[in-house]
Length: 237
Image (cartoon, rainbow, N blue to C red; front, side, top):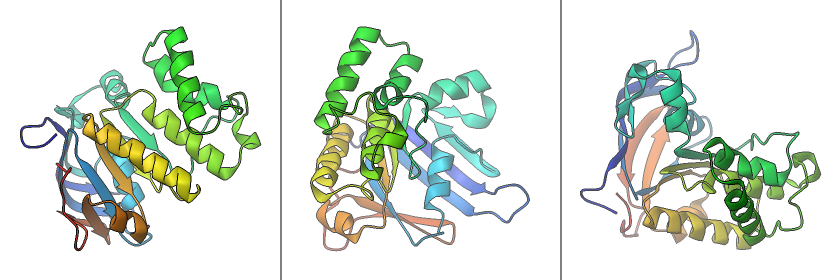
């Protein structure tokens, strides 16, 4: 989806700081359209994870304006903010799975919060985990799963409710090449169906293989989007 596609996110002159420390993000301007696909690149410590926290509404801006789904976030109440968050799927680098819940229940959580029918939830979650090769691990808790399996559960949780905005922080870092390709195909399919996708990665291989626009962040400042060197930028917004 391009051209007249709906604006999912808009940042205007945004800074982000934690407490009284200097800003970790400076003067960010960014617009994401429905159905767009962007990689987010930059060196370690450049601000990729902080930018994803900002976009996922986990941390408010210190300066500037953030609009998500047409709403200016500093003008809405907590209940409305929670509703907006339900439309955002996030793949955290540290997983953030709930240790007391099974793999099935971790993935089912966003559907249940959204009020989905339990029978439908059971079918969607079982199908998703089965497709990811975890059909025999539905009742396993995070401590019983490998790092790669936890990564897959985290990704399943992020996408099962078909979010309008998907943010993934190094989603292929703990999994093998076969599953990485499968997940990239999943993310691409989601963007083609209208989800705005942002994937933070250090992987030059991903940037080389998949011709999508790249946002680059360094020292808290954002540049782009631009296509990877030698690649077309078709499919982006």
